[in-house]
Amino acid sequence: MKYYFFLIFFSITLFFLGGCTSTNNEEIIIEAGTYEFSYVEVISGEENTYTKKVESSSLEIILNDWISDLVKNNVSYGNNPVGKNILKDLEVRDAYFKGNTLIIVLSESFLYFNEGYTHPVYFINGLKRILSQVTDVTEFSIEVPGYKEDIIHPDGLSIKNIYLM
Image (cartoon, helix red, strand yellow):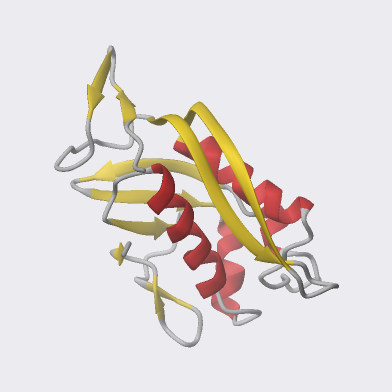
């Protein structure tokens, strides 16, 4: 089930996704629903699934809560140069539309993936799974302040125009 969300303008206007546009001055609000996410427990190797309820919250908050939940459950997609879990300092700073593309602005700690400490595909696939459950977007891009490339990691993983299937 797809969920509707509000775009906050100077007054609140309801949009149904599909063809809506916005700028980064508008906050994307998820109206209500749940999402499910699976992760593999590091020590036992068991796959765990959890469901989280969402009640009228911004997409930015929902995604940051998801990252926090991963950290609380000791999920690690790699460490930074000092051995700290990349996810501990990773945060979503903004989420907005540029045309029909959802732009997700991440903190600079996302760039540790660029240094080859681990592959960001696990994080990006998780992000795709969450977005497909709480929005109706068909594509998104990741931006990091000051980073101008369309790819990340020595393997060349695209972070622009990522399609949700």
